[in-house]
Image (cartoon, rainbow, N blue to C red):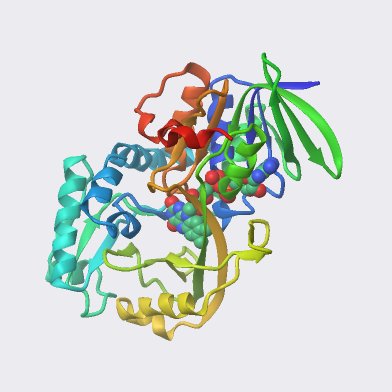
Length: 392
Ligand SMILES: Cc1cc2nc3c(=O)[nH]c(=O)nc-3n(C[C@H](O)[C@H](O)[C@H](O)COP(=O)(O)OP(=O)(O)OC[C@H]3O[C@@H](n4cnc5c(N)ncnc54)[C@H](O)[C@@H]3O)c2cc1C
């Protein structure tokens, strides 16, 4: 029977980056992906590298924001990781770090920015509030509605179509066995090792591994249930809009402190607008169908068009495409990262902004899988925090 040190479930950014870090450290690794690599969230996202606390983390009040701020050491680590990623994996990934602005349009939002940046600076993030003149001098493409912004020079973007595949190729060069079109169907521990049943083209085959890492995005709870574990993963359907290409207009990553917005221009000139606009999962008899692409919501289409309020030039650009995708969150907005309690050598990685933070999550989790220790503490993100929910 095929045997590896580690079996990784899921061929998105997290799974492929894990395979890279694990093989780089000398482990033998197999990765199984039920569809194509990068087919889901990792290839459908906005590609924002946002290290400031996001709107979704500050909209629920100071307590949630303070808790989210405890993850800032991971944000700082990820900022460094993206700076050297293309050298590390030997391929261009479209990483451009020309800084990010989080906008305020009201005096209250300016105050919120001031509180937010104070929290972030206390954790070492290079970020500061610009007044109205400074903001417009730096970003002349913004409308007069914008009163100020938090400026974080290390923010930017990367190309979601490139990153996961580049990680996968780096892992394969180090000997990882990467099998697309191969789904995990069953998982059990025989007292010594994990035995997985995977299927490809309708044919089943068993695999053995000392450790298993679940990096299955919105399907994480389904996969965990195969090992009789219940994980509180919340699937969230989102939509993104892309305009036709235009001349260089917006060099920065643009976000908003008071409402959903992420806006950036790709290297090809298209403007991408997102920021958490909801789409709608397809239901069958009351059950979510995670395999079907979520449907678009008209209110989100109109909502994201409101980006023109702060970047007026966007209004002149024809919309090329609006698409939907789905990502995973947890009840406390923090990632699920670490060993699953009471299951030997079973690990999970999902939740949160796993594009921005994926290089860090995957490196730290690979360290935990191989040595039991991590360079930065990840105990706060352990699935153990959800206590009794872990077991069915
Ligand atoms: C529209 C949108 C915009 C976003 N924008 C941003 C952004 O700008 N910045 C940011 O940081 N984050 C963003 N995100 C979130 C980010 O994309 C995700 O956090 C990240 O891509 C998750 O990566 P992943 O590898 O965990 O999951 P995925 O990319 O979903 O990969 C999981 C993989 O597991 C596979 N799988 C599942 N079950 C099985 C099984 N039984 N057997 C084998 N394989 C299996 C799936 O097929 C899938 O390919 C966005 C998400 C969306 C949807």
